[in-house]
Amino acid sequence: MAEAIKLKRGLIIEVNLDPTKGSETSIADCLQTRPIDYGSRGVDIRGELEPEVMIKIDLALRIVFAL
Image (cartoon, rainbow, N blue to C red; front, side, top):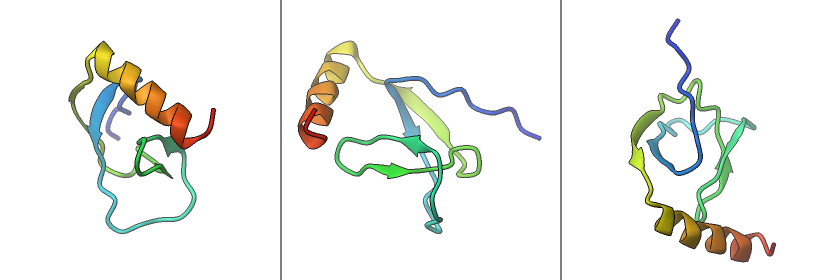
């Protein structure tokens, strides 16, 4: 069994969403939020966002979710 990828805030990840499955655990994208089970979706880590970009994402999430 492959070792689980430890995800942290600010990572850029690629997730296999084909085929679409039912209700799963969550990872948020500001523009296209959807729950995923990253353990079974073939997640690959592509990089990490700069702190300045994360500040902009925080603002976008507050707007999208009316926080």
